[in-house]
Length: 457
Image (cartoon, rainbow, N blue to C red; front, side):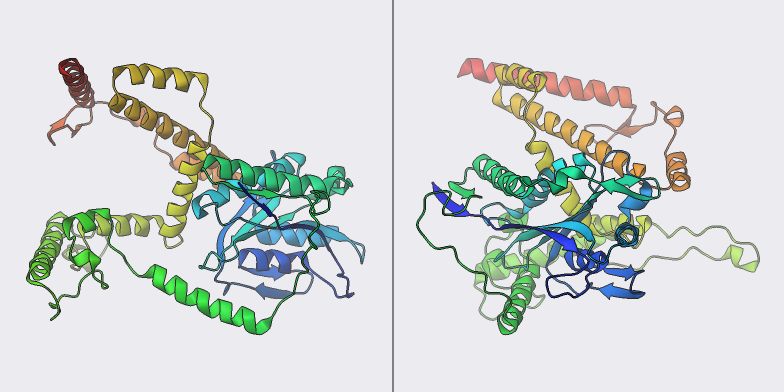
């Protein structure tokens, strides 16, 4: 087992730093999350939108937080407004390194679990993960409010943040959570928050070198090159299976023209690949519909509906594009994918309940395949509960008028038609009850065949 030190630095974000220069909480928040925020105190924008290393941001709120606390600009300007003294403490700042043994998909879960105790105390936690694309120095930035939230601002101080043991406890919590995840993923690496002296190690602690402008510039250039390489499309597992020779070549997807250095087998695959793309386009054209236009008054009413332009994308990519377009320009597919990944990770990290264990044991007595299906259903149920919880949290911070309109836009369950035809197992349109019966028969038949095969073995 390998042990290593952790970097977890806790500081008070004070109005004036050690050099006597004034600091503003809005600027620190903008830097951490890579955004452009307006400072009421200085009457100017603080702009860090060009940061390329911010991979995750979130504001976590305590129970009963007012809606304005979820708006980053309002939050930190109110912190500034509440702090009257010239040497006031604006926030608690925590910066901690993430060991690279923890994969990127688990880092948001680690961060949210770490700040959960602070949020339970009544703090608002504004968090971010920085990673420059090379995974050289992944780390988190956390800003914690230090006063009790009230309907229109802040009240008294949260005393627990001022305890002398606070720093040691924070460092210990970061190390413990890190080691918990390392153990779950099977890593032999462990971290320790204690000093060399406390651990009985005679080595001298290293000193922080401070920023080196030239070194930082070189690292940024290197990170940009790495991000560019990662952004290049690579074949997925299905494409590697369908086109095993082409997928091993440097260029993917293949160029339309045949390369002179291709073998005859690669040329055959190349021809088949572009024939498949033609079929994709034909299928997309057959599934596309004329764009709907609302009726207009006047002579333009009799115009023919607009014909959509042909797209080079497969039909399923077009469907996704249309879905994102209907929701609005603000939707970011990368953000949605990252959220869904975090939902999966949070569901996987939950401990099994007694009922889940009983269900898995019962399924395991039937066959390994049935146990796998049961496990998938349990995971799906957990994920649905997480999404519903997140949705409630998002709705809670919305202004009342907006929340009521969103709730009114939801479909009424009374309008739901249980007899509405749906595709059956073979694609035919049948009632939902008939579909459920068909699927139950298929499952019974599958289980009977499994039992017969097990008996024959």
